[in-house]
Image (cartoon, rainbow, N blue to C red; front, side):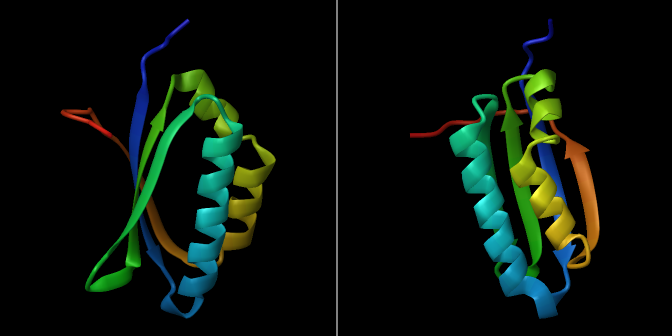
Length: 103
């Protein structure tokens, strides 16, 4: 069983017309994922200051099984369904942690 952490960066461009609704749904999904899923270690979303429709999400999962389980949860599926027409582009990038420190 692979217990190597999965770290990904999601890069999204949101239709500005739907930005408030998108952000509300994203916050709801992130809070549910961290609260309900033991294998979701961190989800951090930021928007570019000069381009608030440009969202970046740093995702940290305990392992590949936790990531795959996350994709099947009711809260994630609801987020995907309700935001699909709001998202202009989405890139998922596997990244290698260099230094990840929290307090």
